[in-house]
Image (cartoon, rainbow, N blue to C red; front, side):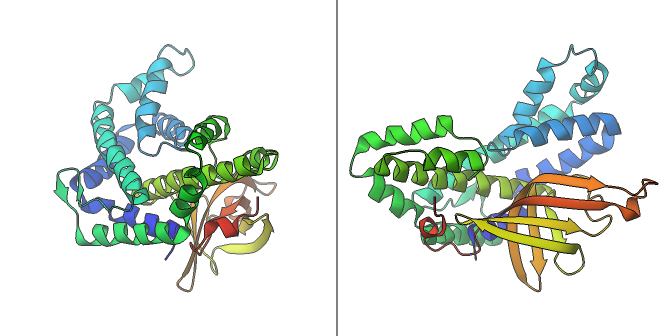
Length: 310
């Protein structure tokens, strides 16, 4: 059991809540009612905002589209999207779920587990998933590290705020690692590492929940879907490059950035931030080459601070 696996299971079981089920049905209905161009515009705008605000990204998407209503190039497309009254209903549901996910993560970091989802009693499977996430978080040592780091000097809490402002929004990105490495003060560097793991935990878990819930995570069968796989590790960060078999990437219409690699019951989770694909001279889809590059999340949660060597 890992943080990523626990989060993925929570996302799968969100449909067992009335708001989670209604949200997914509403989103599918909106897709069916919009033209291909309008849906593509809406979904791609949402994907650009998903980075670290999970379900709040739907509200942000609405604000961006509203701001661009008078864009001459997109006005007709945006009008079609905004004229669909179900968008506002979707936003209401997104706010409900977003608040519950924020509450879940905040309570997990305090050693608590929610007993309800909004006004609903937790489904037994979702309750089990919540407890699994709490156990994974406890094993990670994040809370212990933060307590030991910040208890010495409460002024260090300001360092976390400073770091949060300056970091990129991608967990353990190259920019974030450099920012931490270039800090000359050992204690400040330690505080920055703690802040990065804490913020990354919140962002990664909420994003996995969202993509699992919506069914937009890219699920890959290690034996059937991968032609070649390349792995390397840089300072504890596992980087992966996959060359997929024809049509695997394109078979899924709506895709996020979380990946799940299944291999005989052994699951690996990660996210990709680069994609390259090419076709043959006849643009034959069956002869295309698709290459993904990204990062794998740790498969073991125990003492994550020993895992990363920043």
